[in-house]
Amino acid sequence: MNKQHNDYKVIPINDHTLDLTLGGIAEKPGVVDGHIAIREYLCITLSFNHDLIDGAPAARFTGRLKELIESGYGLCLPSQNPGGQR
Image (cartoon, helix red, strand yellow):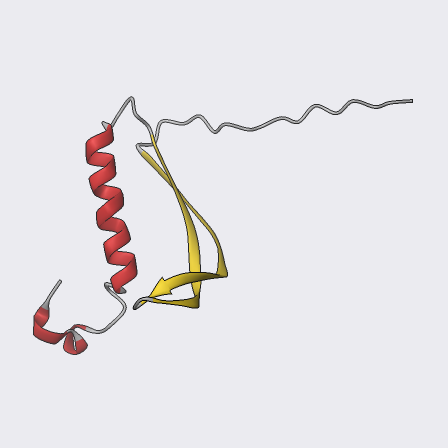
């Protein structure tokens, strides 16, 4: 007897401008200083409500968030921040 299974995908519907989902950290190969090296990568998913925000501002926000995360912004004490840069 063949059983058929329906795969359902859940699409969250809400009234938030942004949903941020953090996934796991995985080791993957990547290019670092022109060489292939194993690095840890964090999976982050951003979901924007396009009824509330247009694509261009969402893309700018995503780019800036990526820059801040990659630079480690906010991880050091103000006294350790050279030049007081933000």
